[in-house]
Length: 407
Image 1: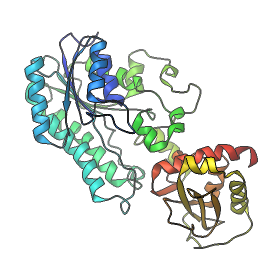
Image 2: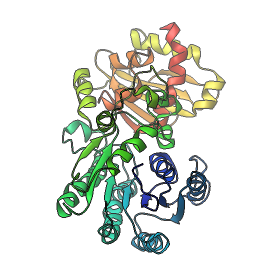
Image 3: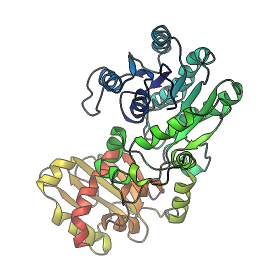
Image 4: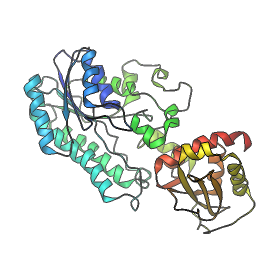
């Protein structure tokens, strides 16, 4: 047991996902948990509220204080901190888990989205830390844990989503600075997963199928638990979940896999993923021949197969119009309409405005539709640029799986 009964954790974004997983693990040891999150009413797409999380915490033996909090709002954070101190007598651990994500390029990212990511990730982390620190300094073993990545400055982690990277690295810079500022008094560390973690947010970004390439949230809560058991002198570390658990004696990591045996998707910002990206290489950028009507070749053959598998059920379940700007040996513009009627596909511009534009090399396009290159991995590697609805890019995998036997 690493949490003494009566220790208090203040966790932002604890109504679901990794934040809730950490809260539930602490609850088993009788900890007090402040659930500082926005969701007070059931969300149409995301499970859980601060109140359902509180019920789960108390069912496991912990005590819960649900607080409706937007981490960008200084007044709301201040009130939640004061309520926590009044109810539980102090704060021992702060987990800055709340985060906003939008994986789009500079021209496609609205300033509203930029402000949201910087406000939640950077400002929210700094603000919550600032208001909790006076109370943490009174604790016997205080910790601040930010769920943020190592500061990897390889440009590949910036080029497809500069705003998100800046916002997420802002959380990591809080670790770098506050660890030194409060060295000897408060342990300030970051925790980041080696692989993608299956959460509701991941489903929204990558689709349900991507879950098979993820680990579950338990690996992050176990890793956080290991960090909280260390003294304040353990500070300024950018911890990777698998690495710290290996030092704790964990050898079998299949227990954390959503689908044991499946290849795992490496998370952003890590050297392992970086090496994979470098091995895959960067796409060759060749000017696209706009409006190409090429009637032969591997791309045309692929689209003939696509036409053959299109049906009303696929159209209904997908609901998107795709435009493909292809470069390379078989450059051209193609489209797939999986939104209207029974669906259609062909060369040239789509008959209606595209919901998502995918730019990639023609050879990689062929690999993607043959099931040899997943859209998620193509995007992470820089082989695929996406403008528009990211989730639609993943929905194509249903059609791709139907095509495997024909390609």
